[in-house]
Amino acid sequence: MTASAINVERLWSMDDGTLCLLVDRIDAPRYEVCVMRGDDVLRENRLYARGSAQMLAETWRVTLASMRAERAEHVTAGTARPAGV
Image (cartoon, rainbow, N blue to C red; front, top):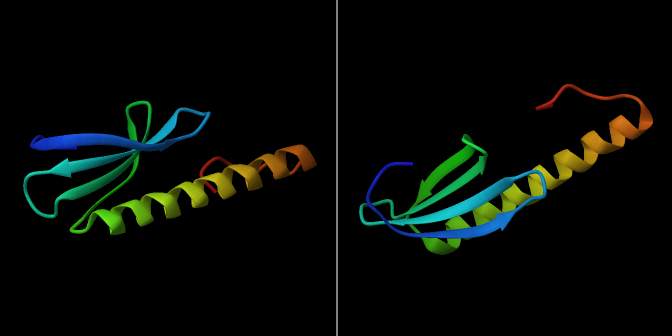
């Protein structure tokens, strides 16, 4: 994330430390959505509309939650997949 943020809002977080930030910037495109875990940026995008940024953040949350659930299901069944798959 670059400088020039005027507001930072946490949209959601997960129990593994993953969190999603909505950064309101002075320059266009004004809204940056950033998913982070620790110091690692997992996903990032800048959009012109706040509503679009919030919808993208929710899509990413649902996707990450379903990936985690699928991975947990495979581990429970003894067919673990490599991380990130």
